[in-house]
Image 1 (tube, rainbow, N blue to C red):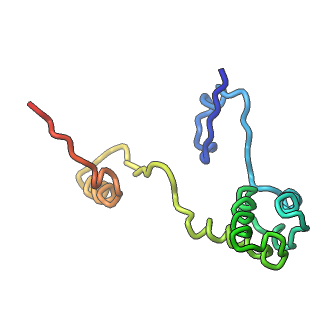
Image 2: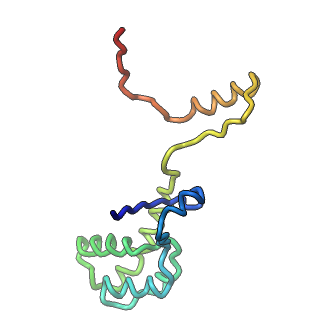
Image 3: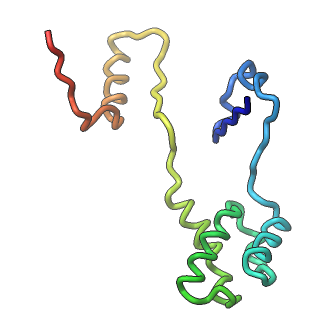
Amino acid sequence: MTFACTTDFADRLDAAILRRFAFKIVLDYPSPGQAASGFRGYFGIDAPPEVARLATLTLGDFAVVRKKAEVLRCPDDPTALAGMPREECEAKEERRKPIGFRTVSVETSLSLKNFSTIRERIAGLPIGRNLPRRRVRS
């Protein structure tokens, strides 16, 4: 049976869990040469020099840029295409937020003094708000 998992937090996984996976594959951002090759593959023209300097560029960004260029009717215009990958990278940076569950560090010994601080921190998290309440029948 084949089983695949993905995570953005591999550094947080326990060593015992990691031993259970035969293959651990890291999918990182492309190198400048790979980015230039990806640009050439999607658009059939040489990549502008700026593409090599985009640290958060992914091959999926090229697919988005290609769709955008087709809608704007400029898929073969090097000048129009030059800034679009940068715009995609900048949009990712603007939207970058933590994902997944939020955790609150709780000290091992709860005293009355730090309990109110922890309660205030937890109250500020959007956990369980606006959820439908279940009625419990007795």
